[in-house]
Length: 361
Image (cartoon, rainbow, N blue to C red; front, side):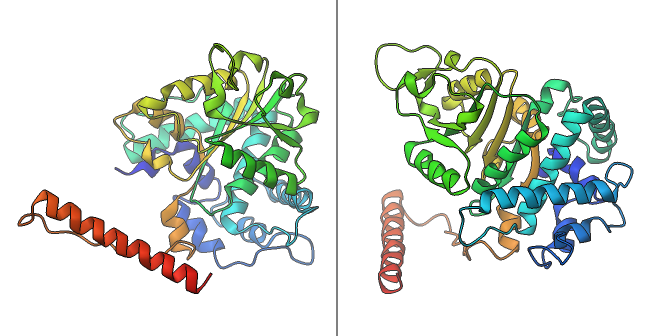
């Protein structure tokens, strides 16, 4: 199944630069230097503003340069305490730029954004045979954007920049800012990284006192999705979602979780938290949940994924690991012998990894 063709929002943003697929921009940007020229313009924006297919009626040069200046400002903020300083790679820059365009349109030209998306959907759907899977965009579809980006491509830093972007455009004044993670280990990692970037944050420690008065000035509250419940029963560290009243700004790590049948309760709770608010989701594996068999999820993320830099693009850029595929011929081997052989093969592979690590730590 060609998942990419259903990613309407992503393809809309690509079309603004005259690109019909990510590879078109990858070809133009991958070899360019990171950083800024003598006029403090990124090398990427110098390429993008000169593209033949650029929709200059929507993205005139002065607007693109303004976005570029904003992105430089976000980088300065997250780099204040960092050594070495962060410089965005081209795919990270595109993720931030696409978000910048989207939030600007959402804040200042929402009716025009809706109209543009639906006009694009009509033509794009005809050309790519979407088969009616993606319905017309409505205002409620605009309150979530998702990033499908490979592990190691910088989603954590992107989250920090998205925080500053949301505050710049003041989509609304959030009553709570919450980062939902899959487990405590990731919560602690996020807390450490946010602090390095100078983003105010704190971990949920299992007490209501961690929540009370948790307004925007106090930064992002980090909590595991397993600690959220619809209704609290007895003691323990769980917390009912109704505690977070009002409009919430939500960041969701491993955004694909909650869409499998056994995780539906998490998705339901997340949706309650996001009601009337705004959501940023991040995952390397949205492909695991997107299929024509689940039309609701396919439509939801077809309208929400703003950038697809999944593993195949990451690998082609030279960032992935080399791998080989070993196919086993069926027949001639009993189930028990097959299992024992594969078990030994995996033990040997694990032994190799341990030995290489010990010799080349």
